[in-house]
Image (cartoon, rainbow, N blue to C red):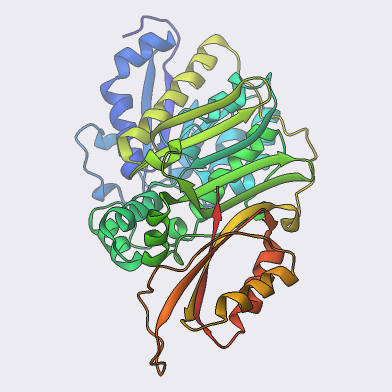
Length: 436
């Protein structure tokens, strides 16, 4: 153990769930080595949880367990917040900062909603706030944005940042499963929560997109600034059509600092099977960063799981502990850019639109006319795919019509699709996917 006269650096842990328990394990089992790296002894002094009687991990001394979360939050040098959610996590984090403690958290929802308030409180109190695990689990993406690229200008980021949806889309692609079946499979294997709403509706990825944009662009980009679309409307027909065109469907988080302002979006998109993101499977995540001087960078690794996430958490604890041992703090979160938020109509993309239609003459011409009326240029047409659905009361043949557009704005595209759906030979729900 590190030999120093100073008192140990005290770590208080809020939460003993999947990530919290693994964080405690690393802090306890690797205490001697971590202390050597820090240059001062480090000690876990408290673990707050809802019911201490239900926590039974051999590496956690039962005398450390307590249900008094505020006591742990205000009696440590470093407070590790792994409760999740907005409240009471926000209250405990701010109380910890006010008490003079530095904070390490993996709470993406908290930072996406209340990040600026927390960053300002930490700076005013002269303590650290670190959160590597809040975006990519074990992937080091926060620190490069916060430190390594601070001398550059980040212009955009694109990534797969949610393992649950990535696993579901993988299963739909490789096994031909419908969304509901793939979701149940993910839940059975522990890849999806009992209530998967936050993942499959894109909210988890949106929180991460907000944090990435805030750090990368040095601007206040909150969760309310992120446009979100999940994967619940992606069907087996969408996957089959993508496969036929040598593409895959991925849920992407995309943030850009363009001429019209900052945009942050989460949506399912078609990407070419040879694109590096196409090979990101299961719980793995990947983030592409584009900067003016550094150009293209890619970060890849485990984006979820107790041990991988705990690795990032403990890495932050060691960094903060070093600062305490050296009598300093890390760089503040600078939000000096008052950047406008780009209007949705300013966002242009190519889209793949799939309709289910009655198979009869004149249909394609009528649909093409609706696109032409609104200035939406068609780049390609595929009429060879058979749909899996059937229209009640219609005895004729149904067919899928898939159109790929040139670049257009989303507002015009959706108005066009709505007009096409009013035609009497179009049935069912249309599918709209962006093409990367």
